[in-house]
Length: 152
Image (cartoon, rainbow, N blue to C red):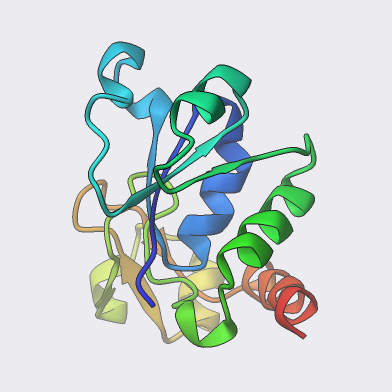
């Protein structure tokens, strides 16, 4: 299933994890507060920690996030929506701007990443919007370990 999310500004760490999982996730702090709720699209699932918004959106798709802990928040979203491992596309979106990242030739990143990283990696990806460069590293292994814990 293809999930799209819209998260309030208090859920920044959750947003990062949802993007890491490959979910299209807009973040309130990236738009004005006045237009955030008004601009929600029907396919977006609202993630909120605000009781009044939770009550207002009673019949629309949303998740009222109960915990302050980002790990528990992610577990709650996965559990409530029935997300399974087959639904995710890890490391396919830019964590900063939510755009799908694309592969880039190793030679194209020469001088743009630390020398050691360039010498020890063959796979690089970039965000077409912000130009951020990604490569598999220890953070990737740690994240995959966490995903294994989440999805068993």
